[in-house]
Image (tube, rainbow, N blue to C red; front, side, top):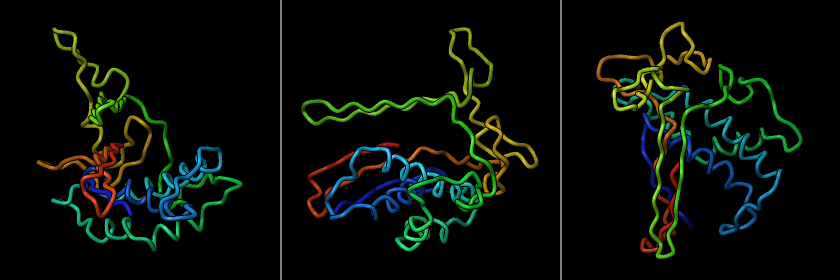
Length: 200
């Protein structure tokens, strides 16, 4: 009953759709919400591992042919395959189990806040300098500049998080780097006037 509207690569709308599609298979009825609890948090983390493993193959569609990968990531069959590999009793330390070819790393430097007013207004804000102290450059007014050029991959060089380079995200003139941002709106279909929201 709900429809997700999100953004294409180089943003991560397909990654969000993939995660939600995996989790959707755990609901007992179409409108049921997953209960808070350790098991569903475990399933969420595992779904994220499968989705972010595929994210490494995405890139700016002006330079990388993403169409088939995005189609697969937003399909039910790939989500079903991934869900079948989620073990409710354990996790796996092998990135290849999740379809990835590089390790996972801790994220730094981004903050997100969402606010919902009593009248239904929603405000979201995401800010990032990408890494501790950004580019290590501070303007005379005290603003620390970001180092989002590190969002690109450099051949043979891991990024500041230690993640191996992804050929789909190598830097080129006029190319946009991949982003984990996935601005999204979820509507309660078929009545478009009833809106849900999410920005990840």
